[in-house]
Length: 265
Image 1 (cartoon, one colour):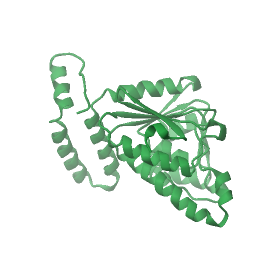
Image 2: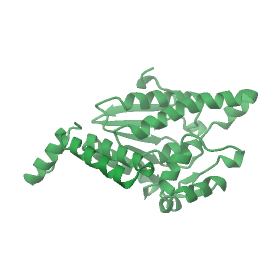
Image 3: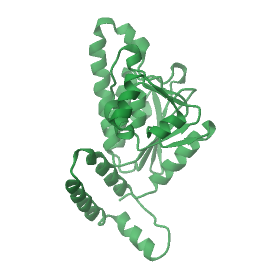
Image 4: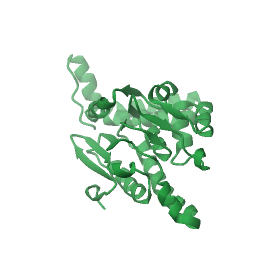
């Protein structure tokens, strides 16, 4: 199935930017089997495409996403554990690709976000959120534990103690509280969310993609490393990046006192 055949979101690619829009506003853009499958396929394809230099994810409707589709979960009855394993296999694959792809990922949160969709949001490199939006850790409220990489992606943003409290107390944070905790990056007026996120995404799509990929990889690795190991990787990465077309363009443009024209190579 190609990106043009998805039913749970729309995807357009142009000028280096892949733009995904969650498109089931009538049901709150839920996470279900169909979404997990399609999102996994999309992230797999986008992470392999040379013409994708940034990704923007937004949603239609009043809510960004309600998280897991509880109605469908109830319908599963005793087969729910099997269903959860199938859904998470796809969703977790998608989150991994999203985090590890070289292209920066920007998420525009125009409305409330809860449960598993919080992890999708937290896995992004930059999150722009509307001032009236709220972020909810809904898992424990229904007797569930976090999934979708939440205990990693949220923890990397908030720190262990703050993330644990967020999930144990099933907290709901307003936009400013989420910003203060590090869970989101930029708070703007509700009607400016998509425009600001797109501005940032387009700026990234015109940037030095290989360098962005190196930056993402280095930050992903640093929590489990010693300072010495990390510095060695930084040196090796910088040396490799210095040979890229964009790095050569960057230093040439600096010397010539002009704006660099990066091509993503």
